[in-house]
Image (cartoon, rainbow, N blue to C red; front, side, top):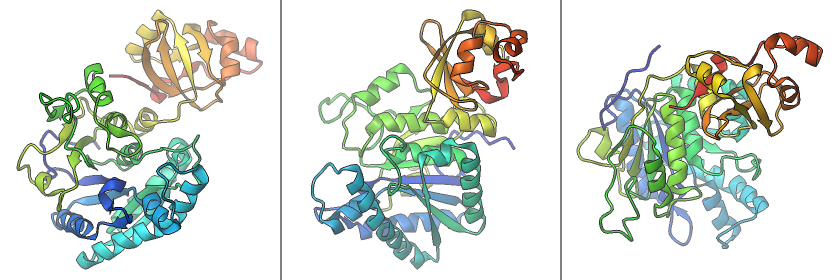
Length: 380
């Protein structure tokens, strides 16, 4: 089913909404306690959305921050094992805080903990999606967080911005709301530049927009504005709007439930959403390698054909058959990404050769395409 194209700056025309809540919003003060009054006001906003027929999914940080206080871990930077221990303690406290706030409105929640591999491995991705869809059908709000207790530094999101975008893509959300401690994307740091202005609408993530994000102030958690732009890329590739919204005030969603002012910075998808499988590929974070192609192959891909071995110039990185790789032009420009039908070892053997030579070189027939067009996405 084709998703409606949404251009307004309100949640009224959204059916399914993912709301991301950062640690600094839900946990406050030197003692690291839940901001109960704020959470109660957010719950009131969520209850209003439910009353007007909206489906809500929450992605919330805060487990490590709550666990740190309990374990008396006062240092700013924790070792991985300390983060995992704090998450194990804090996750139940986080869930209890949401349950206490939402039960006043007769809203039930369910905890869903995800790792990066749960979104990168297709079978696990589909299983997680089915679980979340079932909870929504049962009128239960999924409360999602990264499973920091088992995640390692090498295989983790590291921030919930990208996790929230992957969840939005996974469940086919209309809008992703990033509640933040800043008012949106600015042209420069407003704390240092009095001429800095907030960008109200973004239709394409250009190099200029990326430059703004890199120069931005960062009170923001582990990733700052750069990871929010990466989240926007993932969401927009799935046809999902995104808004970065100041969330410190009480009832933070009230201004966008109905479009009352120029609240936040809104990001709008510029094209129709792509197929489910291609959404998953476009949103992948853990890319296994690179395939460099010639100009002829580049032109062929732009016409909608598959990538063949004859157009491959070089292979970078070690990857297995079925891994997602980036497709690079010979001058170094990133063209897109796709699921590779050959391992890096085999692809190195057949690069530059025609498809009918593959069986002779490898000793087995394999596929004719290195990356089939159905498993390939190009950059806008």
